Structures are given as structure tokens and as C-alpha cells.
Image (cartoon, rainbow, N blue to C red; front, side):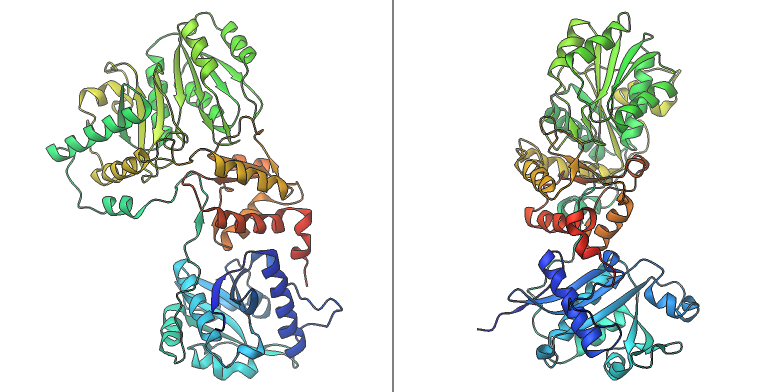
Length: 543
């Protein structure tokens, strides 16, 4: 039986090498657009920004096309007034490098590839496809629904006509063509979400969010939020928790307001961006505190904690991050719990990115914060404040920051979101079926870190204290993390690279909060190596 054709996004080094050779065969050997070279391969000048959609049969790339979203397009250089020709209000994508091996040009492969490309672009919000159509293929492009615009471009030997089509009409034309075969072998179009938030959520969570909104004053909602609070407390061994409409940053502001009520100095321990944000919360709340500011990526030692306690006479509280998202370090709380007990100090924790990912024990913790939109994998929009004691109302505080007011009002002092709480309820049920958290036993993360190091990449966290939640990679100074992140995003891998602290340090992050498939991570590592390491430089050559 003849092997079937699989349509997918190109990810492996072998696929890219075949793309370069098919590119040469088509745009040097058949269409004299580029000069010949002895290597017999042509690397497109926009290779790092292209997403290649390919047809593969028995390991052989038999058809390809590239899509590119970043302006300026190649057509911008040929038509300086390109936007004048395009309909307003649509999001254009440039479709380029259409090539099919001669043996497959008379069958359904070309139409199947075009169908796959149209679905891919529509799924990512593109509205309009623009091409430089080879003049000798004009009848084909017109039959597919493309319309000419502007003057011809290119050279007398390789003339091209700018053309465009709305992707929905293009897809309808492709669907109507005869000879289409089943597309059941296509790779999934969904991008891989490797963001620390918002994370990928289940269909059940989305369905719960879509239920009709319920008033926050109805018994139905009050009962549901009470149930969710009990489930959160049981998940973390906490005494109680309040669910606020807002982010984890709001939850940390509420903690700072509670610490102010103690009227005594404390300690903030930091070794990364989010620990430093705690110090900023404390400063803005007017707290008196010693800042034990350690280098980013450092793990506080017993000596570091003891030094911090020596700086403050009878500290009332110590505040730190459990999982430092910026560096991918998960702190062991054993020693700090022992020391706060010895010094009769209240321990406060930012657990925003650890709750749901790994087991979190908040027994003996005075205050802790979480969020609905991280590893719990509900939808973002709810901040969580766990408390060991029943908080007392404080009329001197802004109402929204008064944890005692929340506690005395059955957790619903103000307008609440039944949709977000319903989604959180379903997400918690999913977490409860995973007794060691969404990140499992850490096997996937350990494999992922090993593969990244084997690819020549530098990780911020040392292996002893590396978390199974976030992996932070420091890129060489010669390669911008924002460029690598954008290129990965174009290829369907959504990573964390836009935060200011990541840009400043040239870092890129990968979240494993929702246990992504190993096969997809393997594909991403190949892409990352080609973009960010010397060993991938052959795929970054410019034609």
C-alpha cells in the first residue's frame, strides 16, 4: 500500500534540510529566481521567521509552503505602497515558497497542502493571504480564488504578480475542488502553550466558564464558593482561604496590608524577580523590613536565613516566594519553617506558581497567596489568600484589601464572578485527581532539562533545586531572546519571553505546568537549537 501523506508544521533538522533542497530545486532549477550554488540548497532569507507547512510521505518532504506574519513582508520591498492595495481592517499573512515535487503535482497533494495552510492561518487569526504568484501559474492561483493587484514584480526571467484572497473564501474554493482526500492524518493545529500563565485549560473548565452568570447574592453561588474554599484549603492543608476577584498581585497586596497590622518589622527574602516584587509590595504598604536580597537563582542557605534573622530584633514575619518563577528554582521550606518556629515568627509565602503544580503544605504558614490561572489551570482572574488565623476586620484599610471583611462576609463582600468560580471548581477537581500535582513526579522536567543542556543551552537553575514547573534558559548575548521567542511562536510554540526582566537578561522560559506532551517538546527543542545555538547556525544561513 502506498504511504499516506502527513501534513504538518516542519520541526526537525532533517525536514528543514529537505526544505532547503526543495527550495533550491524549485526556485533555482525551475524558476531562475536565484543563482545556482554548488551546495544545491537554498535557505530563504526569512527562514528564521517562516513557519513551514509541509506534506511528508514516508519521511520525504514532497510539498511545502511558508507563511510569515512579521512586517515588512518580502512583497513590501517590491511594492513600497503595499498597504494601499490591501483591504482595510484585515490581518494579512504572506504565503510564500509554494513547491511540490514534480511526481506529485497532478494528484491531490497540492490542494491538501493549501487546505492545511488555510486552516492553520485562520486558526491563528489571519484574514487575508497575499502571495507573489509566478506569472506562469496565474491560472492556477485564479482558480484558487486569488485576485491580482498592483503591477508585476520580479525580473524578466522570473516575473511575479502580487495577488490576494481572503482566507475564508480561499478555504471554500479549496473545499470545493475535486480530488480532495481525507485529511485525517494532519497534525493538530493547536499551538503548544508553554506559558506560565495563562496556561492551557481543559474543555471542562471552558464549559463551566460559559454557564449562565449567577448573582453573587444567591444561595447557589454562596454554597459554591464555600465548597471551592474548602477544596482549596484541603489541597494545601491550609486553615481557610479567601477568593478575590483579581490577580495574584492583588493577593500579595492584601498580605502586605495584613502584615502592616502587626505593627512590627519583618524580613523579605528574595532571589529573583518575584521575590523582589514582594519587597516592592512591602515597601508600598509602608512596612518596616530587612531585605535579604540574594543573587538571582541563588538558593537561601541556613546561613542566609540566620543572617537575616540576626538583622532584625524579634521579627514578626518573614515573606518569601515558594517557587521563584523567574529562575525556575523551587525552594525547600524545611529549614525556614524550623527557623520561623524557633524565632516565633510568622511565615508568609507566595505560592502563586506552585499550587496545583506540586504538593504544597501550608500548615503552619500564616499567610500565603495563589492564583486561579497558573498551575491550578482555571482561568485567570481570581487571587487566593490562604490564612492560618481568622483575620480581624480593619476599617482603616481600603475595603478591598481588608481580609477580615472578606472572611466575615462568607467570602463574598462585593460583586463576584460565578463564571470564574465555576471554572476554578472544575480545575480543582482535575488537580485532585493528580495527588502529586500537574507536574507529576518531575520526570518530564528532568528529561526536558537534560535535552536542553544536550542541545548546548544554558539553564539558570542548578539541577539540585530545579523546579518541575518552569525552565529558564539564558541565551548567548549574540542572540536576542525576544527574536527567538517570536520565531518559536511563529512555529506554534508559545513561550515566555516578553516580560521586562526576561528581555533585560536575555532569558526565555518554558512552563511545564500542564504537563505538555514529550513529543511536542522534542520538536520545540530542535527548533530552539536551530535558532539559539552555534550547532544550528547552518539553518540560519541567509541565501
